Image 1: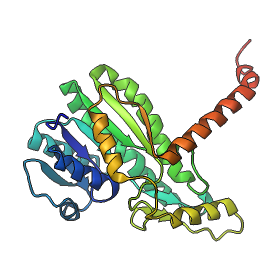
Image 2: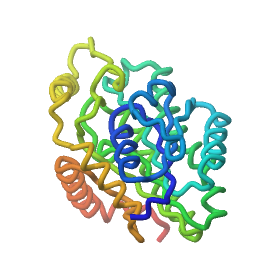
Image 3: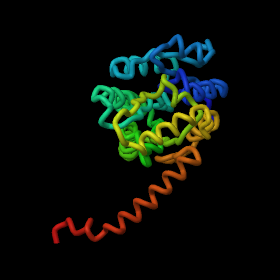
Image 4: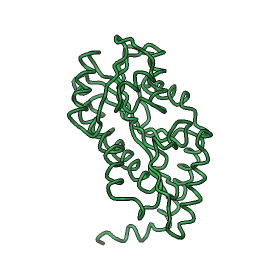
Length: 279
């Protein structure tokens, strides 16, 4: 492994981001990690080696703050090789019971923050003529579950953004992967990471049943954050990493079933689809 690479990881004070940062440091990489609370981040990581670890307090809703963090990373390490847009949170509930402000807030963190980080690291990577961007999506962005409509919309946006970005920056020797996991044993389903709107409207049975089932899995998810971190590190060493990478058996199952259903529907409606063109 090329441990001279510099990683920049957002949302690093807990969950997969924290696991990844610790593993990177254990393996000798240099890491800039961001969080809203730099003290919490530093305590969680537990490393004071300023030669290899840079803890950054970053408000991801502020483009200027993001830009400053990138400049501090370059000042500390001289380059920027791998960016992991990991910051984000979940939202569960019915669409009609979710406030407009809550919808705006999750799009700011899950979508706009990722785009703004990418905008500010691309000039660096273009000048280096190398780089790798990993955007954390979710299988929910492709095959969602009842009650997760708004969250799924944010992750679908990340998927579409990553797909086209990969095409746009290929000529600069910059690779892009959108990682789309199913449930991993992190704090994702806890109150600190999940905006949960309990439905009081009569009906919405599928939503309510699914929400309770998901919440009951907290701490029992099949996904292993350490194994996921190992996979991400391995991706960064690959000459041709995938544009899409689903993580977890459930992610594979849901994605493959969705692809089969979409293919069948596409073919069933083929004549209607092509009839829309001028003859």
